Amino acid sequence: MADDPPFGRLRAKERTALFASATKQTFENGQHLIVQGKTQKAIYVIGNGEVRIERRLRVRAKYVVDKGKVRVERSADGEEGSYTNVEIARLGRSAIFGEMSFLDHQPVSANVIAVGTVDALRISDSSIKQAMKKDPSFTGRFYHSIAEILVDRLRATSKRAASRYIP
Image (tube, rainbow, N blue to C red; front, side, top):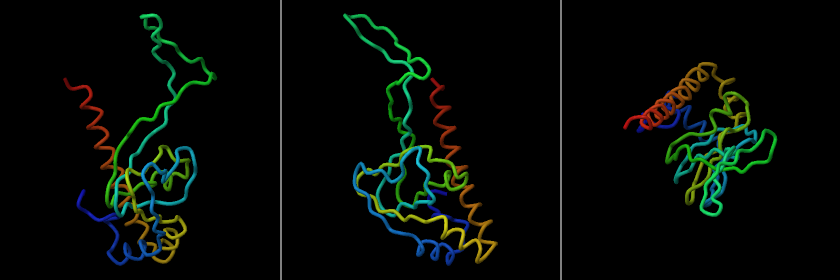
């Protein structure tokens, strides 16, 4: 599926119309395309460039070196702690992101950050809903495309997770 076009289950004319309805945006190195915890109502397709997917996590324990000795300090519940960003993935040309939030209407679960200059198409939920209303059979093909993307990502994540436990 890596060589398939974005939204591979859509008909070519549907894909063309969907992309024509999109807003082209350019992001510079380090700029956030999507911010973790914010709500957004769009799906993005990378035209050119690469993005880094990062999740900001609270650190509940830290190692402290004091006078040559190491100790672990744990944050108490409700206490301010420090945070770290964990890279989850990198996505390049033709990759789609923002689909999880689009599907479940929840705040975004990770930051998406430009690595170098990135050109992306922002497809609004209103454009997608309009296409669904115009042709109800589009809906099945659209969601099938999203399901394939999510399955591919879950398989890749499972493979990475399993490889951590193989000596």
